[in-house]
Length: 320
Ligand code: ATP
Image (cartoon, rainbow, N blue to C red; front, side):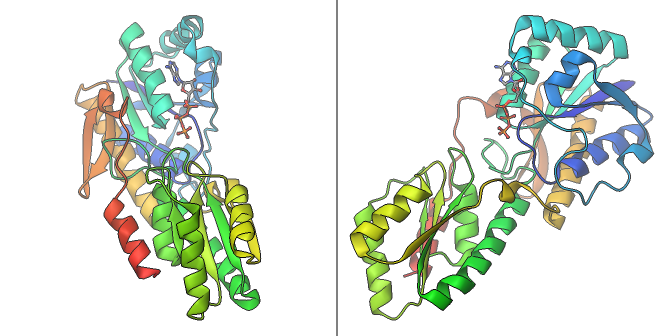
């Protein structure tokens, strides 16, 4: 394989730049050329792509977001759109494609491979950590640390005013960010979409806490579990407590990637190049039990990654 292309697609995630850097440098190290595709599948269709050299990925390992930019492309979901993208595959002499993104981006890669037989490999990049088959996705660690940082700050003001705080976090239909950040931040209650909850139980726990002298309570709500605003309103109604709601939103996605995200992104980007060099296709790279692995793209689709419910139980016990 002489020339591969790399893109970032779907939602941006801190650490994507470290993955791009790893793909570019690993490929060049092995004598290949790399084409960088701007703006995900939109750039693929429009031919918004350029040859990347060693210097093109200098000074990006510490930057959040993605220097290749990212997009959601309606056109790529149509056969006509993909045909235009294939014209660029031929025009630029691309022999393999690395897609850094979420499961939607991988679906696009799979469809494209089926139609045009271009070898593809996916690198999981999403703060939600919701991709089946891998313990870890790029951006998750930074997002969790961003939430913990926010909880620390909210805790200061919550203690001073003896208030109840509801903090809504991202994660789409999964509770990975809520669970890990909630445990690390010492939250009283963590609501995740994977486990049903009863608002009366939450309020009873809050009132027990107040009785035993707790100065504040922090409730983490995964966006897929409920609306933070509605939970805050209900708590207010049922307990009469002064309850404030913070929706962290896109703050969670930004900022300097943590060392863990940079290291994992470097390992995964490098692994993706190895997969293509070894003549494999339709793979996703990931991490299982601290080992970097490659597995079939099909393992990602139609499944839901399990949440560690033991960790959730522990969080409940520790916040008794
Ligand atoms: P995130 O998890 O951050 O949202 P994602 O990769 O899942 O990232 P999506 O918006 O679902 O984000 O997918 C990214 C792009 O992949 C879509 O905008 C579309 O261009 C392409 N894509 C998704 N599904 C398909 C499909 N079935 N066929 C072709 N292309 C697809």
